[in-house]
Each structure stands twice: as structure tokens, then as C-alpha cells.
Image (cartoon, rainbow, N blue to C red; front, side, top):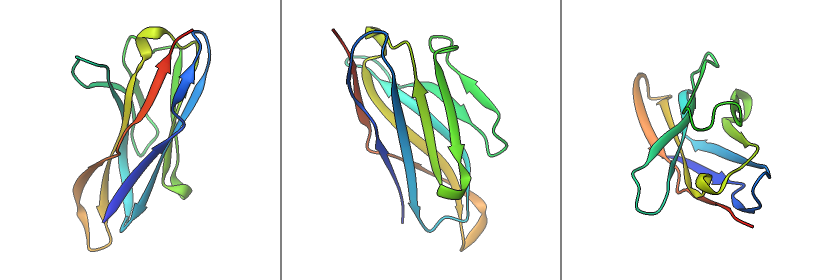
Length: 122
């Protein structure tokens, strides 16, 4: 019923920038927390950044000062601005959202996007 669609991934040179988007659609009353995760080949999925409904943010140490998470509540969309990209940032990036529906405004549900590949290479 609720879907997240990520976009904005691609190939970028070291030092470059990309902006990922995560658009939510479906039976949504409110989106609470949103988060970006990434999974590199052979590694576990890790949290990159998260943002609450009150726009408090949290970042992994490895991306602090380089990545910025934001959201547009009117569009039910989250963003991840990635600057000064490094080869070690190469991964599939996933968006996750916790939300409530019009039918049950008090129960948090969770949904993941399908992922978007970011490759940092010269």
C-alpha cells in the first residue's frame, strides 16, 4: 500500500556530489522517521543518516560533514545530499520510512525502498 522509490544514484568521481531522493506514495497519514542506509558488497547494511518528523538528524561518523539528510513533508519525500564522495561510499543506498495510515493513525509501520546504486570511481 505504501511504496518508497529512490532515485539519484549513479557513477561519480571521487570528490563529486550526488543527491538521492526517496519519494513515498500510498495510504499515508504521516511519515515519522526517515532513514538512509547503505550496503556495500560483502558487508552488512548500515545506517548512514536519519531524520525525525521534528527534523532532528543523526549521521554515521563516516559521513558527518559530507552528507546532509533532509525532508519535504508536503511532498512525502526525503533527500540525501552527498558531497566529497569517496570510493568507500560505493554501495546500494536504501531509504526506510516509518509511517502511519489513515486507517490506523497510532500504529507505526515500516517500509523500505528498492535501493539505488552509488558508485564512486575514477
